[in-house]
Image (tube, rainbow, N blue to C red; front, side, top):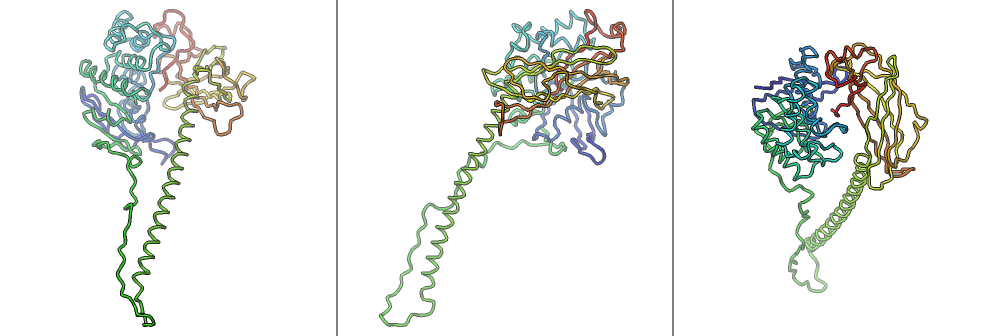
Length: 461
C-alpha cells in the first residue's frame, strides 16, 4: 500500500467553519489507478492537496507529524504532481523544466538528472522538442513535459488534478493513454481528478466528491439529456364524436338536464384549446429564455477568452532594496490578434507562508498609473514595493521564503464598459531570498552555478 488516508477533514475558518473535505478515507495500492469525479467546488482539488501534503488537514494524516524538512523530502521524492495547467517555467527549456525537481531535491547529480530528463521526454514523444521553450510548444506538448517533470524523481504516487481540462478531445485521450502506459512501466499509483466521466471510467475504482464527502461511485450510462429530448404535450388532434340526440317536436317540453352532455363537450373542447395555447406560449417563452441564456453564456465566454487567453501576465523581476525591502515588477502582455484590451490597474497583495498559514506583507504600488484604466496594446509593466521582514517563515526551499502574490483586476474590450467586464484573478508564487541571509549560508545547502538568485519562480499551485 502506498497511500492510506483515514477520516481526513479540512475546515476553513473558526469552528464550525466551512468543511471543504469531510471525513474522507482513501487507500491506494501499488500500481493502482483510481479516479475522483464531482462538480466544481465539491472538494476534489482540496482532497488531492491533502493527499500530497500540500495542505495541512484539520484532522488526520500522520505525514504532518514529520518535521518540515522531512515533509519537503516526502513531496519531492515520493509524490509527483500534475496540476490543472502545465505551469512550466517560461525561461527554461523542456529538458531544464523536467530536470529541475531532481536538481533542487538533490536526488540525482546533474549529468544523471539531465540524462533521465531526456529519456522521459523521448518516451513521451518529445525527443525533438527537448530544447524547446514553453512558448513555442503546443498545449499537448506542454502537458507531456509536465508529466515528465512529475515523474522525474520516480515517485510511488502520482496525483493528477484535471490534467487535460484545457485540451481538445483527441489530445486529451492521447495524454490519458500515455499516463496508462507509463503507469505500467514506471510502476506508480495514480489518483486522477476529472470532470470527464469517460476518462474516469478507465480507472480501476471510481469515487465521487459531493459537498466535501468522498464515496465510491458507479459511473452512470451516458443518456440523452432532457434538453435534447423532444417535448410532448399530448395528441396532435382530438376528435370528439357527437352524441346522437332525438328530434324534439316543436312545442314539446325539454327534460331538465337533457342538453348537459352537449354543454360538457363544448366546455372540454374549449378547455383543451386553452390548455394547448398555454403550452404553446410556455414553449415560446422557454425558447426565448434559452436563447437569452445562450447569448449571455457566449458573451461571458468571449470575455473570459479575452481576459485569460489574450492577456498574459507574470512576474518580470524582483529587486532586493536592502533591509527587508523589495521592488516587484509584473507585466501584462496583449497576445491576442489585434484585440483591444482595457484593464483597471491590478490590485496586488503579497503574502509569506508562516507555518501552514499565509501572513500578509506591507505592499503598495510604485506607479502613478495605479487605480486607472489602461489600454494594453503590447506589454505593460507594473511596479510595487513591499516589505518582507519575517523570521519564522516556512522553508519549502532551504533558507528561502515561500511568497505568494495575489492580484485582482477588471478586464474589458471597451474603455467605458457596460455589461462587458470580466474579473480576472492571478496568483504568482516565488521563493524569495531573505535580506539577512548571507550567500555563503545558502550555498551550503543549495547548488547554484553562481550567486544565489534573489527569487526563484514557482509553478501555480
